[in-house]
Image (tube, rainbow, N blue to C red; front, side, top):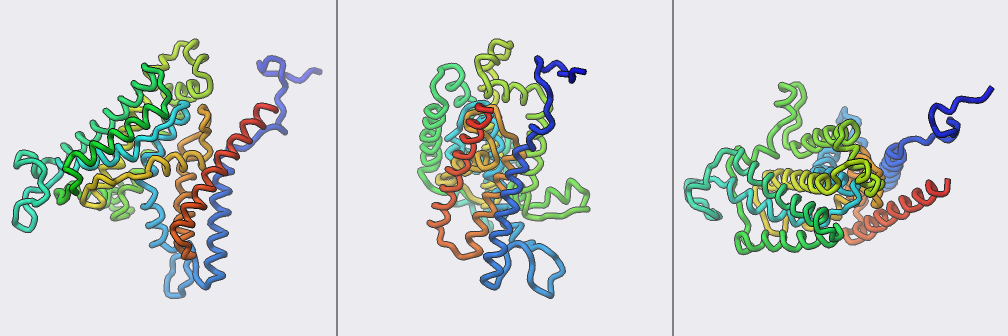
Length: 370
């Protein structure tokens, strides 16, 4: 009796050839890295993520966990947008500079009129721009990010110039805007409501006080956005079109997808997420500086690549990027815990990024052969 082919064009389903999701490999790498740093710290008489103090009941070092999560949350939000761009078959080198430009513009509309009873010494505009409702700078910031993203997408989609060149031009231009906005001077002293965007307790508000995590709003928003866009990429037409275009753009056009419009949309969403990161960054620091966001774009791309997103397009996931961000955070914190100098950290981080790309290329060649 012949085995059924189940509409696979005559091919038989072979359970032995099933492969586990690539995210499991990334998760396994994360666990291994944590174990390595824990062993290294124990050898030196300390600990990494687990408590060694008898007077503390908690299993984990909560303070270090909080720092690790917070230090990648803002860049992780950028990485969510970058992941969608890479899956589409593009790249975005402008996100760090867009953070800098958006930060300067947003903070200019988030300032308070009085500082210790005196006029704001860092005021950019007049009284009309002081003590505005918090929604105003938020909307202005989102508009700035979306505008930058739309320009990137329009250049890529309608002029057919390579994404590398289009976003490189935006990177240079946006950094210039950041420095020109206030002649390179910091913009400071936001309203209390704006400062609470990152420094408040949004988790306590969402759970009606059942779970409280003050000061970690960027991490909470990062998780919420990651879950939201993971579902969007897997369950909606938007996500399916991203994977289709990244896998085979010509076939996507022939199937009726408006590829140019979708590219512009994806880059616009990536710009919006970059603006969210800029808003949270300025709220957390209570100031904006023209140099904010330097190298953020490379860190975001690294998180995506380490998380299994293919630079060739068409493959990857938001959950993989989240795991890549976790690996990124563990590596940074782990090196700090064993007192490795910062320049060595950069060298090792670069080697890990290159290794992740080499592994991705090897997987593609293996898949093509087999």
